[in-house]
Image (cartoon, rainbow, N blue to C red):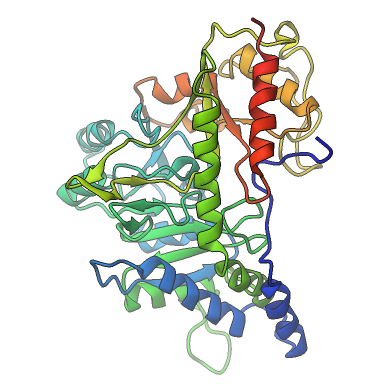
Length: 431
């Protein structure tokens, strides 16, 4: 292949509307945070998340500098303080759990269910009961995650949350446009988190948003996102706030991206179907897909409707990959799939919890073939920084981490790219 195939490369609208909105910002000198593009982007997002044939949701949205900022503000709004505990999915990116520690609280890690790879409801309830027994108080919030776009079991998680009266912060950073029984993720809990990072379903280069239930919640979050400045002719602060609002320039990109959001989602689903078809007969390689359930046997409304932000596979330990004998022999010098210059060089090539040798060998093989592939997220309860945090585990996320891999799915990934990726996987396997 002439060009490298990336996991999910930012893709602008063919009409160039992103540049149009950015130009308007420059022409009107709205190059600072807030402005017409921010207001317009929030309105577009509200129309998107509230679109449901059966419900009148009336959600409000606050555009922010990052999805991590959205998690942080949601936890503040839930009343999380030093010494509190928050139940959070272990199988996730660190942005789901780090904001808990920003607040001096403790993450309580919850392992995954096998079919979706997301928070296991039975472990969640076990954890809540155990934390109440051990600490005398219940967790202050629950943070399920839409891993790689896959919906979590909304009904069961919300049932448990309501039973114990614990607010839910839905981390749908990877699940923009994913749905549960036809309703957009991020609209079920007290708060919903979205991300518009450079490799997400739509992008604002960097940025995120927080979905709130009503005007009062929206207003409170807005205050915290703008340094909590009170309404005086001078700067008066009665609470600690943060500089978390999105810039008018970034929001201009977002407004253009919203015009192609549904096209992007449809493309990712198409790529997923291709992987399922082309890898169906490859022994030892399994494409992870959503549970095939429909609402009341209505074939038009699936229970799980993933955006398939990234397509993922698992590789059986018995599969032998070319070059496998050299796996983990060399220390990685830079970020694998990340930004250069932000990685501290490790002392060793291995850790006590890592992908199997054949998974790492396949990653290296595909990298040499011009394909970006990555391991799945390392469970947070196995991260050194969280080694002392309580975790309620069943072995699922650790097992998937050893055999899982992410494959390209973005709008620039063409049908012939998927075929090339699959052919590369086949050629890497030692018969």
